[in-house]
Length: 142
Image (cartoon, rainbow, N blue to C red; front, side, top):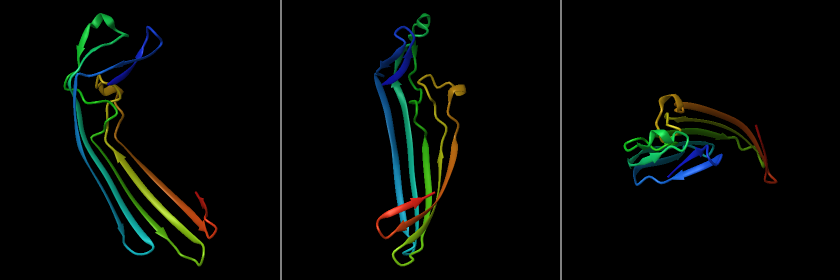
């Protein structure tokens, strides 16, 4: 199923592909290295494509039926990998903590047409935070 802008109704158009193949594998691993240190790795690998998809673009009806068979499904990167590390420092009933995480995502197409100029580029995002967990189940984090 794809959702596309519909210039006739000024809304969205939903069209179903006749056949799609999608398969993948995910792996999530966490290591409690010590009582203070935790390391995590999450990964997802996916392959998805239209096996059979004939599409009529409402914004360009003059093109007639467009065969998009073999194109990748939109919004479907082939991989996404996240790694993180957390460190807690027990201090009586309070506990400061430090977290670092990085996520890398492969490029992916943003529409069923698989146009390179409209693709989302691969990216890596790094997040860091410092937290303070107080005994009364109240936590402050930056």
